[in-house]
Length: 293
Image (cartoon, rainbow, N blue to C red; front, side, top):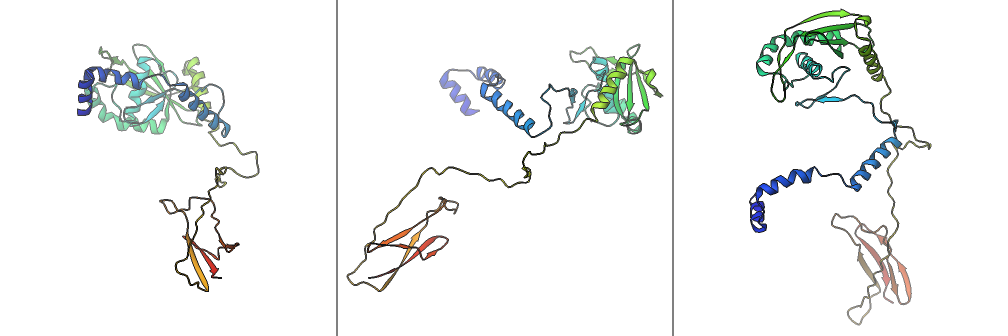
């Protein structure tokens, strides 16, 4: 912050102006490059999976303040029904997010949470909600693969008058089994559609059209050679008397991590018009054996 302050003083810009500008920069519209990268990622995923190109019909999610998320069931879109769904998730110990419930009501709910957890464990998860009379909400529970339904009617729900309303009162509740005819027809249709979508095939990788399985095949990276380097070294013997044989050690070029930089090393020794190949190729050097004559 001291650096920002000194820079702001030098540029005659107040810190308030800088801090006001930061959110705007962070919320700027994605560039064409960002959108292209996003489209490429979607195309790659669809190319190797069974994701449809049609617009997504996935249900909306309630992302809690504690890090979990729940799909909103049919009927949970309204203010009071949405409050009832979130309250049921808290009462049933599905989440610890109580941000939509008034503090004093949370304290009174504590003793009822084990009972509601048992209701949800035995009756199933919330399948749908319907606004009943007198600010009451019917919450329908059911298990996957079962036709049995359980209805919990939360009575006389009241919301606070705050700018962001909180649930500050529940008049009581009734619990009992119901049949299909007891559920409003439109809500039953949406509930049936939502339950059928949960049985849809999950995301799987599409099989490859070639014989080898690309999922388990080794990854091979190739590159086109970009150049060839030739190093020439002229050697001069010290002294006037020649020996019968000479051993010449030629070091290999290496990088900082110890691996050879080039794909291959080829070294030759030209002696008296003759070209000699290396007699030994060691890890760090080449060995030449040359006659003195």
